[in-house]
Length: 70
Image 1: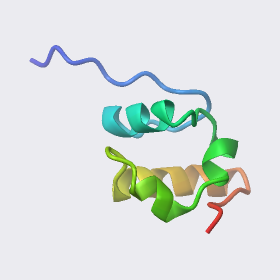
Image 2: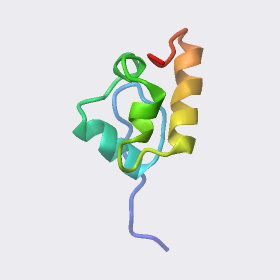
Image 3: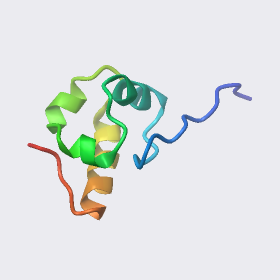
C-alpha cells in the first residue's frame, strides 16, 4: 500500500500526475488557458512533464476549442 497521495487537481487542468503538476505549478501554469499560451515542446522541456501529460493536456485543450501555441 502506498502512502503517497494522488496529486491534487490544479485549476481546470486534467489529472496529469504529480511530477507534471509540480512542474506546471512552479512555472505558474494553473489553467488550460495558460497551457494554451505555451508551445508543446516548451512544456516537454520542463522536468516532470512528459509525452503522456502533454497528450492529456492536448485532449483537454481540444475539448475546450483550445490548442498549444505551436
